[in-house]
Length: 546
Image (cartoon, rainbow, N blue to C red; front, side, top):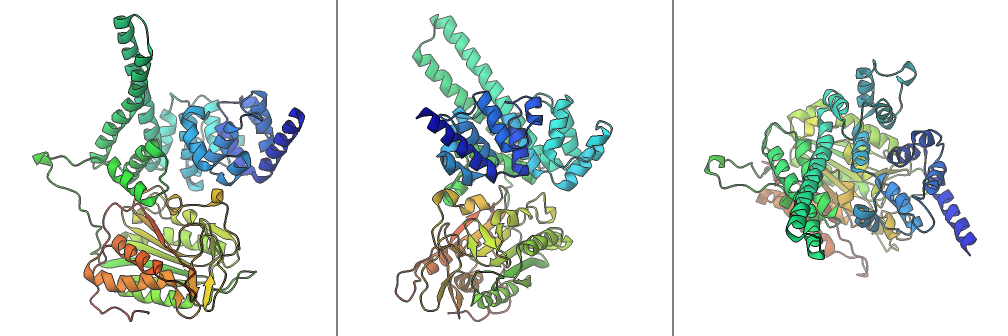
């Protein structure tokens, strides 16, 4: 029986190994750097080798697979967690007491994910005197970080070289390092407080008892948060601090409390609670404006990607042109310069994002809008070549670091695509999905996980994750038509975008197919810091579609 379990366990590992490519293996190697020796890591050719080394050191066995679950979670390969019997939420909840990857290693890995190919080339140029000739063409940031550690130029208590490199190639990267340093200082302060309390207790009572242990536990948990909060308040109050530093700090507090909020409303409330409270100091009466600046000479650009024809088995999205036309009319009326792109492949979509990311004109614009009309699955949309493009990847092109011209400006994304289940078609009703079955719950991606962990984003989804959205083949989709109608109706009344999207939800939720059986509920996710109110156009709104 035990032999059968062992064989089954190894088959399970082989199956996971087959899903992991070269980049994932490199990431796993790096995250295991504190668990395995350099010699072992250099011998790794596949994930299977890593599994074997972890089993040799008894980090991984058939009765305890959490280390593997943690590694998959860290590299965001959540779909494989179910093969180990875990959900993403279960792994997250157990990391605090079962996790093996150090905060230092997590910080370096997070840093590597934000370093672009251009950043890497600049870093290697700065380090050319320290790099052997054979290593002057490193392929990844993880490779460079590993080299620095081997040369004793980088360690948990030696971050000077890394900080200097980040300061030279992209100062925004320092926010990640500063976040780690603040956490480390907080832990040290907590340890000192705990030691002092223990010493006092021992001096007064002569011995420990259960009540003292409980008190120390509470102290060790609360002290870091208080210390960190004061440091973040100082950072937030300083005008010299970058936007990324402020946002990273806010997200870090939220992460320590409950990692990521799955419920959007809860997530936003945490964001607000994490921000420093305004004081009543009479010398500090000036408050930041609560409304985004939308009175510039140019409102912004609006991209519309309208995929209605596909090269394979996906059905034609009849009625989508109606949506594209409605969006173009409404956003032109709102003062944006509209650009429409029909039937874009996955590669063309990413090329478009790259092109618009570097568009210098953003500097003189108030906002940016991107509308995508296509088929989709959980957390992604389909290109005309029927290849998936993650929504998060699309939005990541416009973060403050990737597109500094749009920093602190609202960036709105509206996605008309199914996020899972295809509903049986009725007359004039079609579903924007590929798969006939509802996706497994472990594979679903909530909208709050699709938006970048940075301020000033809004993602309007036509439907909640795992469900279909509906399109009338003559009148267009329920969601886009409701959005266009409500913008025309409520912008002249001075309503902000979130209030308008609430009305869109109300409108779409009341709709149904001819038999009254098929329903739909849109879902927004956002990290907006202020109210977004479009100026009232001088011209009357276009004819609203009924």
